[in-house]
Length: 273
Image (cartoon, rainbow, N blue to C red; front, side, top):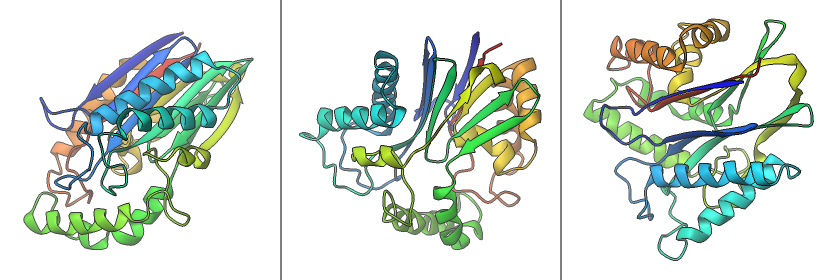
């Protein structure tokens, strides 16, 4: 087995709100989210939240191999909550949240969990690929993004429309009919997408934040098979370089409307055989 990890913040020298890590037989990737310019109620910040939750989750899923990934995530969210509920306002709608992708190998199977719009790419030994992505956030976003996508990314008008969009979006967070993401409520873990695949059928497992998967699912400049070929030949850094190249060619979102011209991008590529 071998693991390749690449991660870049949206802007050079900026804070990276993604988190990824591995342990023997397990891996996690979290993409932290917040509301830019809004009062979050939390003095720690998004990067602290995703890194703290990610570290706890990785230790929990390895220390308790017989507990489900969803139960481990719920426990980890509860612990993070206890670490700052006395100092921060966890009822604030703009508080830190995070997507979660987690995998754990054991007893001949790979268990997986996906919550939020990060992605899990499973490559089979037969050459086929399967992608697990929680599309509930995307589905909600498509209903609301029209005014945002009609404006140049980074313009004052875009900023105003984006703030309104995010305010409406947060009102639908962790609610039936909306979308689910890791935040202060452990019950969100019960809404994650989970499954298991026999290890004997897999050649590699890749965890991607949406800042890295946009080469496929937003820009449509590559297929998942092509992404896998890049990862196997050149590694995660090359995939992220190609994402940055595409973003640079469309700096104001004319070709690909998006909330952020650039986003934190993280890829964890775990080759099993």
